[in-house]
Length: 104
Image 1 (tube, rainbow, N blue to C red):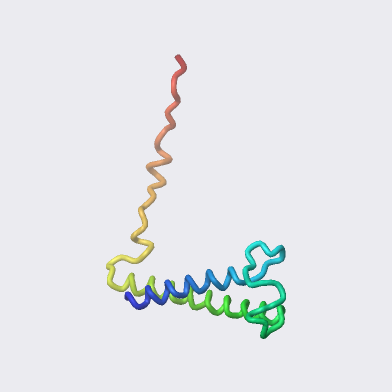
Image 2 (cartoon, rainbow, N blue to C red):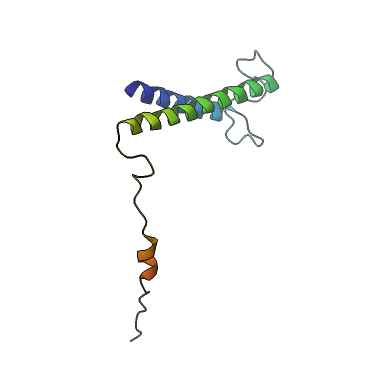
């Protein structure tokens, strides 16, 4: 379980870094540079494509790991995730009449 959490943490940090490296239309958070690409080995278009693919792959792994962690955490539990949510009693709330304060 601890190993899965560490992998999830590494994926989260990597995903944040990859998103920040991508250039945006107005260069708001684009920390990757303008035309130099990654170390000047690739064109700006090629590096954007590579970063987009790496971001998509990392995001997919992150989502899969999130699902795996949820399943592993719920295996030892007697209740599922939906049963652990607090119950909402809509009938009790609708039967209450609103209190109107009196003006003095």
